[in-house]
Length: 584
Image (cartoon, rainbow, N blue to C red; front, side, top):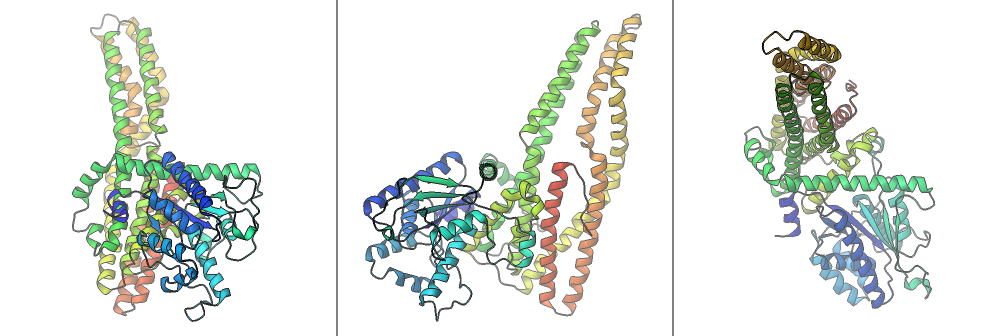
């Protein structure tokens, strides 16, 4: 099984480690030291994130790029090699360096895609790429390409300030500042800005004329541009570690629930109207597998959260009834033990909340929806990246999701290409996507009133009972002590007391926490979505009759962008309990 096939089967999100560095390394002895330092960095990430696979992105230029590739191969880490020039032209840079050429050929043979080219920079073409200034532009493009698609940059750098457009110092500065790289104005407005840390291995070079820095071969870690204050660097470091830990948690859940996910897919995703029926080639298998995992994990988190709460509720009810029946003659002891059971439930609920199942549910849901849109876009030939449509105001919640989706989409694009536009693919996507959404939201609205009207009444009743529960308990205990002649009255009092205490929690379980306001919001949201998709469907039919295929693609592109933004807004709403309808 190849390393790529391992990703497909394991469905994990990798950490992509980019490489930048000097071409003119000095001696073989120093190369050995630098390789050992590189392996130490790989080992650090493997230790901190044991469930997360690594991928090394290196452009295989002479010197540091090839050295890092060799270290990755020796550590059984897959490599992606985006070349600054087409392969046949790129190898000309190895003229006069036969040993480096051998190393290049060996490393490239291990690459996931051996013909990966970063594309031509503005003004550069095959006809003029041998001119030195044009070649410099291509190496600059290659450096920024690596920076754009990595999670962390390892730089073999002597700490010298920028002196050339394609130098390592320029790539380091670009990585730490997140300078926009050939983004459209639209993406600049809505894309989440993302800086990436740089691990510098202080590297002497031949160009330094024998001068060796005092801290040669040491490793420096930068989380924000050099010279920024400590507070900013600490915040950037914390944000990066949080992002990586969320990716690690996701991969851990993929491993933990692997069998459950397989069963869910067999049961739920084999239906005729399932998105999986759109798979037409291996090019879509990678994205589809990750979508199914994210979608399944979101379902699992919601189920486990409810299950754990139900278990805690049952424990309290049973223990409260048993305590009440056993000590019904001692009201004070009963109140003490019942209060202890009440506190246990509060503690149990707090422990459940600390597991952040709710946060993971909304995050996994956002990831699944983003990947679902990407699958449809790829299927009909729309060349867009879904993660770029997440809003900036969602950064602190969903930046790890954006980074994860980018990694998934990028690795898929390295091995495959998006489907070409075809009438069959477009029609199938419309049928599954737009028509499917109309059916989904229509069915939701049909059951809303039937399901949630009684919930609203009972929830209001529950809230009122919660306020008067202490008074009712006091009255019942007083009557229990005074009316001793009534047979089994103590048992009746105990049972009534238990019901009064646990009824609010039963109501929360049955009718949902803060459900009343959210039900109204959800109904308005679903109504809006249903009207939107009906309008889109009508517009698609109109342009279909006019045989305007580009207009149909434009409509589907708009649908995808809207869905990604909507999903992020929904994640914000659920996380912070601040319901807000989308702007119409």
